[in-house]
Length: 441
Ligand SMILES: C[C@H]1O[C@@H](n2cnc3c(N)ncnc32)[C@H](O)[C@@H]1O
Ligand SMILES: Cc1ncc(COP(=O)(O)O)c(N)n1
Ligand code: SF4
Ligand SMILES: [Zn+2]
Image (tube, rainbow, N blue to C red; front, side, top):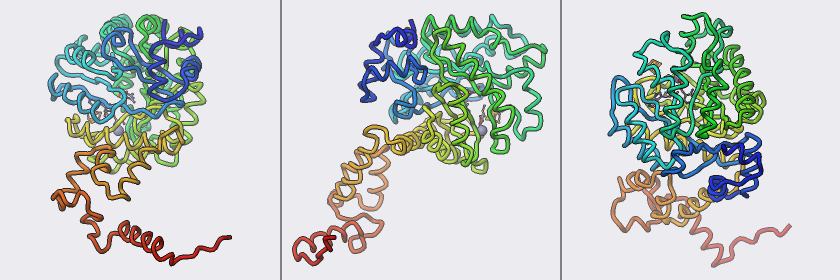
């Protein structure tokens, strides 16, 4: 049984119960959303038997964020990756992807799954390529199926598989500014060119479903032809692939597997709503999992910001999960500090989306923090913030003494120009002298 098959049979699983509590939603609604394919609960049976705390991704639930970690051939190791996992979860990542392509991949993933309370995603073609020796041309479908089964056995909760890249669509990328920017997509394209054959992952779709169903691994249908620059956004290649992903979504559901769909990438701000709405329609309401999107290409070093703008908008228009982008995007492998910056940026994006969509209780923390701010309750303001340590450090940079923790001002305006203090004075005057008689009409 998968969460989807249970839900369709009208059953309520223990995972659905946990999700209902976390989301503060009726458990019947969770079950119905899962049954309809609009919500997924990525919970591999192996991981669920261990430390996993079940969570849900779908438009009815709060907007989620994913943090990518993993080493590369150039840098990092198991110790550093476990630190990144800890930092990502500490600052509120809802899922983590291990995208390791360097040494020790198997050991890194095993330890990450063992220690992670959040669902772990992978892209199995990366490890398969390592084990093949680096030449994608040497791959056959069985190599890939074996790797998917191996990772499913380890407890991977969701997998990115690039089934949507088709031989007949490759020519649509020739005039692009940035070609094929998806790693998985570019590898599959190369294989198809070398063999002049259709995408083997698409051909093996039903066999893949059988493995995914056995362990309840959730599909994350990869966007191998996503645009890698705003110039390439919303082009024929991107939307040709999206149509294939729509068909795969249906086939995955028919086989009883949970499905979400990945999306771009680099998209100008004014095209985001259209992209989200089109995906939801073409993929029959399956949860949409977007990478950013970055709304401009001019700020390497700050792409957590360029993409946070896109992510907030995507979330507002119905994306179910936002894959973070760190300050190192396009420049190098993120370190622990980059992971922190990426997660914080995306907590902001997801939360602003929840507020804009008026999800239940979403604004409560904003209101509580605003009240603490107006009451000059500095400690409470720090406590309620996404990054309390940084908030306090910034405040204390100029006014570190304990007495200033009850001061009715900070170093921005000082005591005589603090507008919130002046408002306080005004309200006091009004109370005492009843100076203002407001018209009653
Ligand atoms: C699909 C996205 O995944 C990110 N990505 C790829 N590999 C890693 C890794 N090892 N660590 C962190 N992010 C990674 C890239 O930033 C890309 O944009
Ligand atoms: C949201 C998201 N995360 C990870 C990947 C995998 O990366 P790639 O497609 O480059 O192999 C992806 N396509 N989308
Ligand atoms: S991030 Fe670096 S290695 Fe990856 S595609 Fe871009 S330039 Fe190539
Ligand atoms: Zn990019």
